[in-house]
Image 1 (cartoon, rainbow, N blue to C red):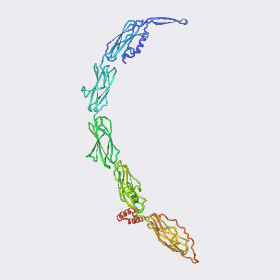
Image 2: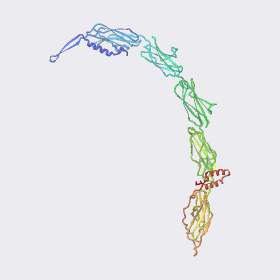
Image 3: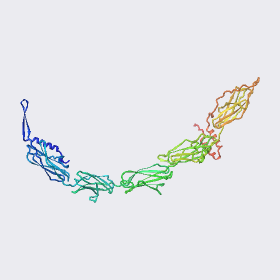
Image 4: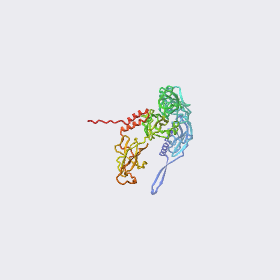
Length: 638
């Protein structure tokens, strides 16, 4: 709102107050009051206001004018006036703040206006006032002169090495159709310009404009000026900015994923730095990139932006367990950037295995190695009897060991100290247990990772033959008329063995008596046994007996021997009484109480080695000496 419109209400109040203070013609009124008092009051003498005359405006410019009129209130006392004006075809919406007095004579009424809008029609009228009454003159109009536009320079934003955006420039067209351009250059004038947006403005209000400047050089200071022009003239407002220095594209976040034996994904982020940027990936099996394969990025070239754009490549058809070198290249008008790396493709495990060793009747060992191929891998030895191997389809089967058993699993991690694991790792010497004596077995190292399962070469071994105990019947001792002690020897073959005597008064024997081990009789795996009968034997009677031994590998019987008890003087019994065994000590069903010495174990092992083929005896003996070394007595210090 213009200054001419301000404080209108206060001006009117001032006018009205002045009128009330300046009453000159009074009528005296006397009022009789109760009690004989009187009240005297003064009342103004009013006359009707004469309609004032609105006269043509004067001193008209593009932003100012003087309003004129004649006021002759023809009233007693004083009167005031003001002007109403507006752009809306009436004179009631705005009022001047100028107020004056009239003393009953015709006066010249004037009101200067400022800050008007150019080339704009205004309607106005003079208004006379007196004692709260108004009289309005006829409405007249005037049009301000045309004016040059006004303009501000705004500011440069979104500055890049090659462009800038001028924003917040303001153009007031002064109610005339006004064109707008932005001129720019390292110096002005330069002959270079771009149209504003919008390129033309109209109306009476200030309006914002902008302009996008492109095709600049990096790292340069540019001057610009906003030029607004209408039919009256033009105005300019100047500013400046400096473009950024152009850079090569930036490469960040290079990483690999989805790596397997034949493919991989390589991803990164590229910032083009405001320039159109091409990119590609080169890879080879040598770090000199000789004979490298080049893959152009699917989104190449990237747009001329300044933000990191994700890109990726998926390589396929690679060779398993192979080291590849790669480099990502991004290039724009300033230069190129590179990022290099390497990876090794995954693979199924590689396994090796050795011949079975320390083979016994029920157990064997075997060693092997596993290369995990850069992946977490589990490994074990699978084994199965010859019969099961053939039933599963033998070498032609996908897994001929499926019906057998396996050693405990060994886990090999995919990396060691953050380095991917492509080295061979030993799996120790797992033991294949619970074997059957005298049986041929097939076995292989089996390793599994995410790429698949690898079976080592099929290997075989044969367990040592079964070794049933050896029972030898000894002679009877301490034979009397009613008692006797039977003896024998048992070779347990190192296995848990049950020992007894079969006994009877006929060669068919008939009863079994547990035998006791004679204390201190142990010699290697051989023990002496005995069993006492009495005092229930019959005198002068022949008895038969034999030693019996039983273990997991079988049963052994000694020879049947006999003895005859002595006789007493006196009558001879026609028939012997029933045979009642004498209670004996509990049956020994375990191995000798004393553990075998190393020397005894060595002797047993060497005995087993002698039964092996000549090609394996030497290795067997070395293993036996290693497992059961001879102990040497330490000399006591004097």
